[in-house]
Length: 280
Image (cartoon, rainbow, N blue to C red; front, top):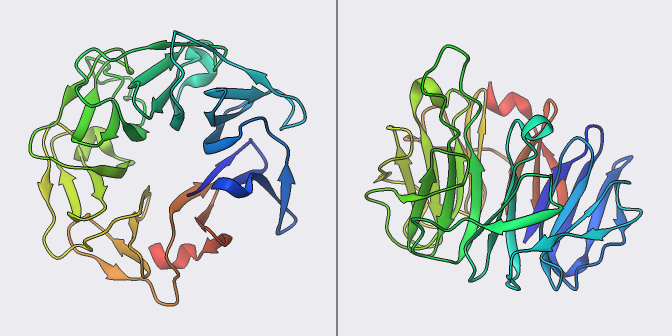
């Protein structure tokens, strides 16, 4: 797969077995990293993290110049996905999904990791996504985060400490996205490899299949202007997550991510920019 993430100024990319790259002056520049099998990566305000095997999670405080392995709570499963709390700068919380060992949670930005599988019944975690922080006037101030597994979608209202399976969504889910206005709309989208797109309008507690959606959903992204989805053929856009229109001249993506004011798509061949005009 191809993942994107960013430091405060620099987008990075990771095309699976090809290694880790940074986007520098419009070119992909290789970055040495310690994982033999690299599956995911992310960056927060002061460090870059890579997930995979044999080290689970490793992190660099110097934009990839030097790396340290995180300490794991008796877990040796590969890490498949990483997701940082939107308030990670103050909370220090990052979640990691593994291939067979469930969820791991760090409260010190990746130095130490502990299993947090209460309520989880599928330990193959394929994707993670946080809801935006709750507004100050909202109570209770839930810390909502969602997980895709091989038998459904799970949600946690307490920042990944405990999990509950969402109703309706069954099967293998591989990507998901949370609305920018989640605390008013309650919309969450989740995509599958063979069963199309699923949508929740109650904050991720239950999902229903979206009629006429692409059967295979490889990437999802929420933007201020709506939603983006990629199937194996092209990228699609939607205002509400229900009705979808193909983006002209788009190529399929395995990840879509917003970096600053720019939307990027990534696949096995590299990264490219998506025109923001398409979301107007």
